[in-house]
Image 1 (cartoon, rainbow, N blue to C red):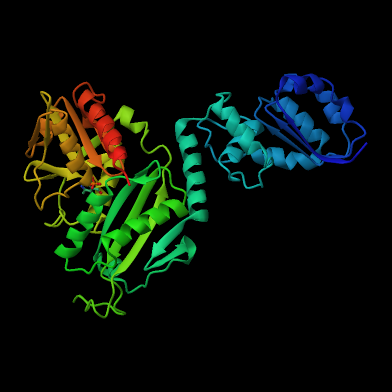
Image 2: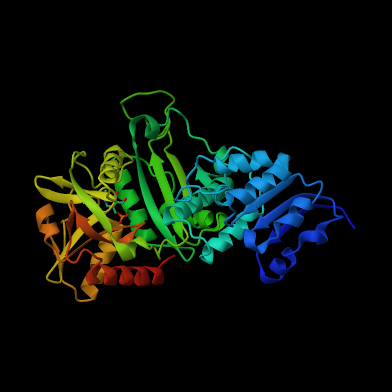
Length: 445
Ligand SMILES: Cc1ncc(COP(=O)(O)O)c(C=O)c1O
């Protein structure tokens, strides 16, 4: 008989039959036995305990009793430590108390991390465990699954992303900007976020035009032409294989080599340009859009040129944190009793079929999605009124929603604890989302 270092036994009808008697393993030199999704009643424990030379048993995805685990631990002292450590794993990421080694190993493996402090006992189990989850064999709570997906995505992104910095396409780990960059020191920069659907850029022309305006309002030189910008966007989409996601673009007044309040001479200090991709599979099919978001009202204390898309985003970030703290998703900012906009979106209400949103001025960002959505709404014979509204009026509206390049049209179902309309996403927002996605995809580049 050949030497066998690792035997990986997965749950399955035929295997289960074989497991009734593990005696066939006798005579093999076996270092490690991995049991995936196998419950104790599928396994006769006596022949297992009779196996010699075993250094490790990794049990995963089954409901093993303390007695069974203790018997294995007693028979295989080398294994004991593993089991005990797994049982003591402090990370309760499974959503419930870690009840046994199997559950704990599952958590550790699923999360792709060794929370218990020992190297993962079953490196191969991740896939099977994940498949198990997908089949609903032993579902983890949504938060855990999301956390896993985010970590995986982040890892994939950070491992592979190619970014653009001042004329060069580079691995993100090699991309550098000076510490004297005015974007870093003074928030002296502007940005754009363009979404990608089906590998194509949504509303690119609108974003490019607004970028030009932001730059010109701040007397900042454009580092590339808008045609070149399109080429860079497309190249990044291609290099990073983005099907659904976003492209972030930032232009700053450059790095003059020292800190000074006065603007540097643009002839001597070229502006800095940085672009990177954010891979977001499922962006268009965002499940949050079916549920809607909750917002709170906060005071708008931002500067007076919100029509310029600058990187001064500290207050909007603080607003998001205030919302989070209140158990909500976002904040609507209020000035002189009227809603200006969301922390990173434009705000709307619907009353008697009429779509109401604040008129354009220096008080709000002139959303590219806003412009497209209002155009599509008018084309669909929906009534649009551009005027400001109060939080109270919004609470009493039939519907509310926000728009932005990354969320498209997102229903708002609660404002400061009061349900809007039925407290569920309304038909106007749902229809506008549908139209926006459909129509902007048609002209995506
Ligand atoms: C303050 C603010 N308002 C509105 C928007 C929506 O603009 P757009 O539709 O162009 O993404 C954003 C987007 O970032 C924003 O930050």
